[in-house]
Length: 494
Ligand code: ADP
Image (tube, rainbow, N blue to C red; front, side, top):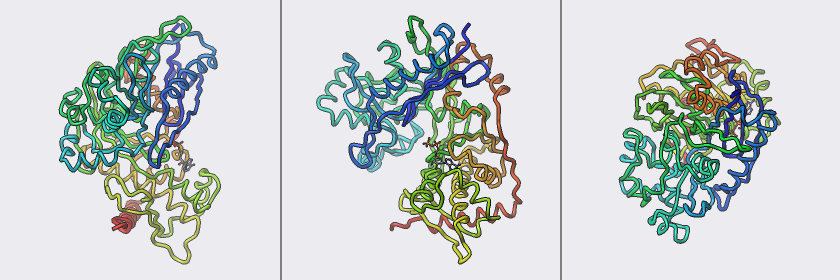
């Protein structure tokens, strides 16, 4: 009877709903884009009612598309863009300001003040994060400081804060449930990821009353019920999108990694019950929690991955479709000594140099467009290599496998080169919606729709494996030249 799980994937640019069956197959999907609001340079907002309307719209649409009855739905799972901050009125249920999106840089100066006041080490120790405008804490503070009367209301216990998961749970349950999961809590910069509680000292620093904060539950847990055409369907999973992808790829072992090749690159390594503190500027974060057991991951991101390809396409006009880069780069037998370091916005982990700028080195009179395109693709693989090596060094774990997704993972040249440079197999999953699938797994484990993690692992299907083929000497040479190229890009602005 209960044959399906619906995963809601509330992303940065669109809301998606996907119906999965017991065989992990996508039965139907629906998606809807919503407005991006840019009030000032560097500021990004969403209208919370758009997030809700688009998400509930695609939920209804996907049920109709799949042609299923609500009675057949086992449960609902939620995965979401992380860190994005919504504050709403406890009495009216209405947001007091737009959602401040993770990308928004408006609180950069506030972060600088926190660092100057010497809070950086404490924040890193308690939350696993580096002080940055990316995370929710300074966004909440901004709302409390800038919306008239907000701080006074918060102090009276009349405001609620949530990341997008919390907002959706609240709306889906008709305002009955105010909760989040450990993975989302771990991205707020307010949560003590070791002792698993909201951190009192940080709440004091930001002047955020505890009454504003949701209850924190397991990622696989009961989050209340949704009424769909008179049928009450339980919400049984909530998890941040990057962690959900790690789970969806069945990266269950210590040392397993997922790498998303999108506009940027997002890499997570499972470290199981070990909370690893990075020496290379990677983040420590909660990866999942099931049955009151929390697991951890280290996370690193690449600022410019697929966007390097967009730059070669839109600014240099070397090709018209990103897909064509595979063809052009295979027309040359190697990179001809050309290296492109896409430090357009500085370099993140493990270099952390905001004064670095992009550079192309090694040009000769024989260098051509194909070499340059190839150098662009290679740069994505090298940057991933640098993060993955930092992860290995931090965690003392050997990378056991890499599961990939994201737009640029469609590029066979890039994936083969990645396998070669890392000397590790790369596995591409059948279901590309890895975040939605991860959330679906967690709901299904809770309701016993799925038997066990082991059974999920056994059934998970890989469409393509890239095996390393490069000679050791060649690999060493490529990496040596890449690191030399990086050194030329560092500290450029000084
Ligand atoms: P996001 O979710 O960040 O918007 P996607 O996962 O949709 O990103 O991937 C889009 C990115 O991938 C773009 O930056 C695009 O340039 C790049 N991309 C898409 N297809 C290819 C390809 N075949 N080869 C290389 N890059 C690609």
